[in-house]
Image (cartoon, rainbow, N blue to C red):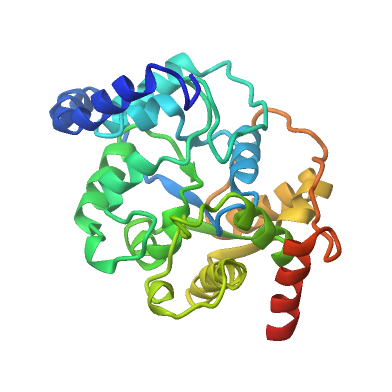
Length: 300
């Protein structure tokens, strides 16, 4: 299923109404006798930083639970969504491709905007008043019933909820994903409409006067990294996107060792490619790249 499919408006309408069907999950949970303590492997990143590919790699490389389009659609019933994903997507093989972060198909890897907004409260614009720790605890308790050892997530809004995630999930590994700043800012600039300059926004950024869209995207990427760094701790690992593309297995080994040190052993799953092509933007690529580079160089 593609985003531009004629069925998408109907599916979005049905998905919105699905929030009233949470009672179905509560009927199913008593039949699951497993009692676990699910951990969280959480990617923290700005938009256009390679988070979708990183999420796809982790979801393929490790035998944990990761959201798919079907489980994101069934967001109000996380246990039913988990069971549906296990049954329908057991033989799914990732294409490691996406369209602006969207992976098509029932079993395509999903960032989970609807899922996490429902259970966490936090959307893509920072607002601490929306955070819902009790709802998040309810989600963890539900997923504990599945017996799955850990969940992998790539929701961009998690950068605004690090403390709450730490509080609810005692076993958590945050992966701070960093991409070459010029390449990240350039990609974000090209996909950001002038009418809606933010795809994910730290609270203070909208109130700051900005003289150009170029400076705005640089500040947006930097602001998100600064927010993540302000929450740095032993449970956080910095991963460079370019390093991941060049040496997938080496990066996975680093993640595996870090998770093990946190008492969250990761079990290897399907094979993944040894490397991926990476797109690096050079300062002399075009006028936009040159202007972004001047802004970055001036502020360093």
